[in-house]
Length: 147
Image (cartoon, rainbow, N blue to C red):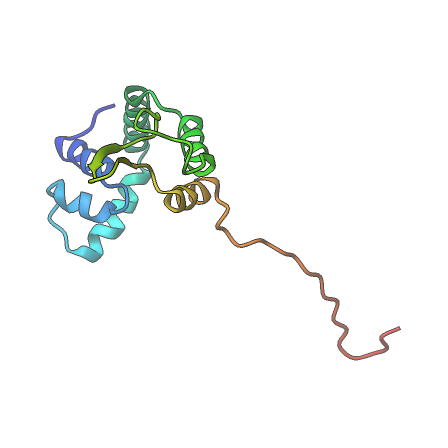
């Protein structure tokens, strides 16, 4: 794939924040206004060489992270299903812990991933927040006998 340095920069910026292709297009050094950037970035993302480069780099990032989609779904599932009282500072999802010393006794506070946030992410990943599609058939007769 022969990509220009500007195209390489566009891909790099786009992969850093895939929510804003227009901003990536401008950061790559293309001299355009915001409206043009939106259109031209969308076109750039459709070019076969750029699509292939983005796909290849995403694959490299997945391999480097050693995480699959199923790994992430599993983590989110565990976050949602793990009872709050069934963990300690050694739990594999414990993000941080600290001991609070009191006059009578001490206690350990453990920070775990948020269940509600895990539900939101899982719902989005699985596409469950899409509205259900229903189809209806309506026969309309205009004029004449309905029989």
